Length: 518
Image (cartoon, rainbow, N blue to C red; front, top):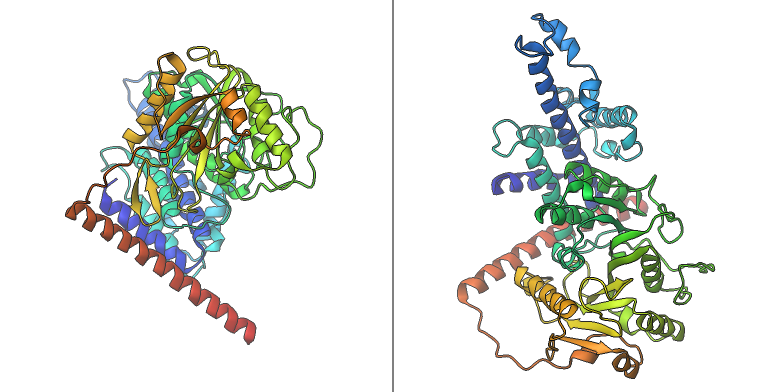
């Protein structure tokens, strides 16, 4: 997908913002890409069948009569036995394209999605029928359909690969251009990469109890594929509370070629665990990614709370204990939480931390740089949990590794810091050496393997800064002129985009106030 196409795709998508808020615009464009993807996959299979039944040399040859083999290629079994979803005629891309200029195209697309769900029970309830959000007088749906129709035979990669790339690109763009999103936080790819490389999933069950749009599940599958593993060596599971995000996750996984069980419906994991009878080998979770999980009026007695009952106004320790409870005997987990989880002082939470440390449930704590999220400048940390500190290397019982990674990364914009491959490799290698070698070193200002006695002396406060000490001062390198100008240009572009968003919101608010006044 060329940069020009990306820019044009984003510009057309951007037009939706004048008609609706950004969250709804995202649903529209991603939904259209998904329909095009399904239709193109179906079309590829249809072409294969056409060659099978229309060529006299084929064992499946039907007739020289076009009407005969046209009828043959519409037989559903040719598709479903090859795991291709059946797309009814009214939902195929060419049908929708032929009707794109009609004022009721939004309704027609919703009807197409309903037909796809009816024909494919695995998609029931997972397609977002939101296209009536676009006003019937608008031509933007027609423009988007025309634009997406240009992805096809002339592309070197093939349409389905490019559509998957477009879907991922837009997910990233919507997150990167909206510092405050309703519903939650976007998990930065570099953060997901750290979790995946530390846990290194290679087989068994992988679970994300608050999976968002499925990014951690996708990256887990890609990690296995990259390292030569078999795709069927892992089973992926996810649960998500927000109905719209749950649907986006289902579409994202299909379009990225990843099979996963997202449960029967969107649901609150802490209240309604949809995989209550399963334990997992690897768990990755970012409870920060959703603002919809709140403190409870009460936490009932539950075997999950083996380290202590969580407090009512903070879900951090409910998540940690739920995740630990879901691990198999040799399982491990990585959890993203705010830094407050390391230092909050209410007595019951101190007792939970103490119990987790003394039970060797906590393997590694990593603090990350601030501004790693666009949504908030607040710093976050990673909790790496394990059921067995004798697995994956030497016997590490009685030790916890603390890594202070706050000095890593570089600023990409005034609001965002990013960790590059070298930063991630530094963290990964530190973990690997500590896990496998008795000769690992503590590095002042960066990492330390702390004993139970060390942690007890610090009253079970777990911020790595308490253990690693201060790093030696470093001379600040002067920023090169070209690099500085590039950075400032990016910052200026970001500020211009945010100014445009604010202008649109101000106009909307003004119209609303005037309407209420009238």
